[in-house]
Length: 129
Length: 295
Image (cartoon, rainbow over all chains, first blue to last red; front, side):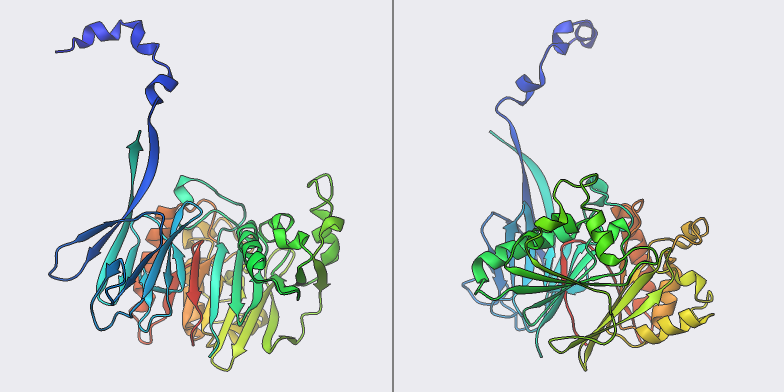
């Protein structure tokens, strides 16, 4: 077990440079979608830098097979270090925090509504080597 | 019906406020862009216009066909937070663009002189003469008609003066851009006009589909800022509702209002006005948001 009293007087603990602490470690912001429908378990989707289409048909990376969802309903893309959601001229619209949008830069805690599906956007910082 | 979209490039009033506490609503100052049938109508040129310029440069690289791309810029007035982005607006330096700038003359200075003044070498390294776009300044705001889109204006109560613009896209879609206006001096606390300027404003915004309006101060903050040219939040909601506005967009956020303050305020007023019959949708403008303009 470490003796805290001894460490307090140990000047070597102050000599650790920032570069040695940070060596080999980079931080990256990672974004996720939690997809929630009533009476169903939450599905988590990790976003990459490629476009993600949300829609009713099976060719969509995020498939929501429900009648009020358009075949290709919304697109999430990565631009300027941010994720952007865009409505693909869907019949019933894409909503962010209750507002009908054509496009919207996403921020943590935004709630996307597509039909009766709620999608929660959030971010985490991850260390990468 | 042709598509029409409004994008918010800068929603902050007074001064740009970058930083962690303003990431959600954004720190750039006033600038919105209406895109309608491949034409651009830009309202104010605060620091937000820089980002719009970047997007337009990407667009021109892919879509330029030899014809100049027309950008119509309407300036509510020439206080810094409404013109400061113009020297950083890349299309202004590019001959593939044509810029039509519309605005009222200031009492003391010609509009063109005011805009070139901020590019004086004392303030900025590049002179206005290096703007290569076809640049035209218009100070006659009567009966503007651009490709069938009709734009009218009215004076507002703001130190030095400011102008509100009403855009009529077609018989079903209208919106008003009305920032930097002190309605508290023109309206009673119940939202009824108390002078001619208030009555004129009330008529101007009546039954519009979207009103993008100054809501800089809370009611408590306003008490210390009478005469500064901005409106208290309760009053703009009352006036808009009484005038039959369908969608009220709160804009020109105070630089002291962090994201969490704006979230609290937006929830309070959205719940209040969206539960009425008829309901008025309340949108808190945020940078990076594009909304479809519907009737």
